[in-house]
Length: 303
Image (cartoon, rainbow, N blue to C red):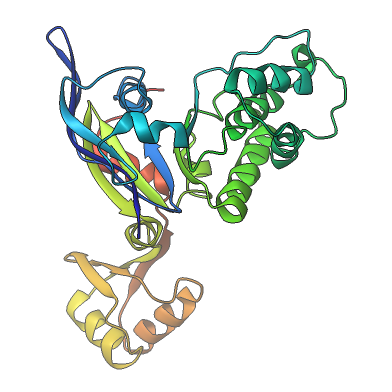
């Protein structure tokens, strides 16, 4: 599968401060890449280097398997921070101005791009009367006029209400699935990223700690039953022999973590009790993306 983005030990220093340190990021064609990190972790600094607004102090960047970035950056669409508009003009009028700046030939791209982001029916409504979510979608529509293969969005859901977040999420899924656009999206709303991303990268203090796929996240965030008993060794035998599962681990001298029977914990309780194992408590443990993020970086998130 084609690699859309590959960074090789990309580092950015500001005076004595290292903002991004030896980052090796890999994004494949078709990915929706969730880029996760605290404020000041280095997300925006890295994104600015990817799109050419800043240069790495050291390291290299490849786009579409090419080190000639001037040749490939035209295939990128970017919205960093708040998109800029002329507020007293309509969405279409703002798009026409952008279309002229791009030097595009086919004017039909304006209506097509507005339709893709769900703004084809707003008529002459002035942009200053748009909701924040509508403004974000208009910013993305402007980038789509360049028919990008790779879309980079820095905190596109920041400040949006739940309805606006859902609109952005559905729109990005549509662009990815119907138009085949690869997307990098940074966000603090990790619960939303988990509904959207197919691949993730976690950055902390300028260091890309790890990358993992949606499937790997599901395994790492697997729900489980925490079972406290009076005889762990005997309980393990019951799980293996009577419940035919080896999907469990011993946490301590009286506690098991069971990864089966999440929806039927009574089956575990019944089997153990029948064999004179005292079950002191049984509870469900769930781990979501935010929990996993905090586990990986440690400490308390400070948004």
